[in-house]
Length: 243
Image (cartoon, rainbow, N blue to C red; front, side, top):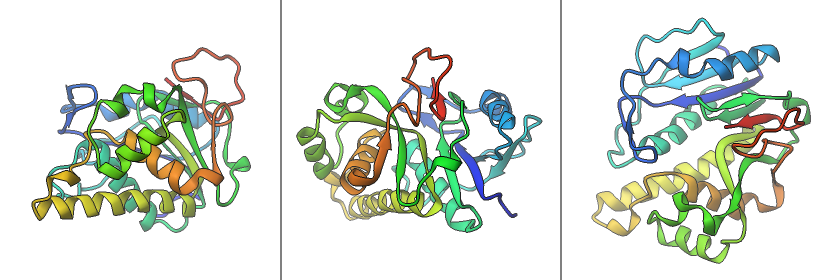
């Protein structure tokens, strides 16, 4: 399968408990759940790829639903970390991709075409209206010690949200590769009996840690990338509306 050069990619993991929302996500109609985003992308003629472990789902919305097996050698990971592994694998397999946006499947829409403005070497991310120290999904979950130390020392930074991330293929692979390296090290240490390497249930802390620590001088977030989360901004110059 050959993929276009500028694409939007979402991941939709099914049949796995969602610890953030406290929901079981079995028997999900993925085409319907991704319809709003797919229709927004059709207006800009941007190809949309939805990666999922579900079998036999086909869309009439313009989305390409791609089956991918989960990496089952890491039994302690939640669906949020499996999404990272899945996106990393897909980008690795498709060097024909030049630029991409990685988005949450169910609550993101494209408001303005982004790829003409994406610069080499720059990572673009969505953000929230809170500082890190005021984001419960980060502060209420225990994580690796170095990540907890970073969050404590940098609590006044704006909270970044992995629900929208845009960049060249190289930048996205660099970001996801660092995340995968941390995940792999943690799983190895856990298998050796070191419980201090147990990751959080959600990926918010680790994604903020990686973005600020490794991309701080080439990171763009704010209203160029996304609208105010849960905000009502019509019209907006942002690339994406998130929630």
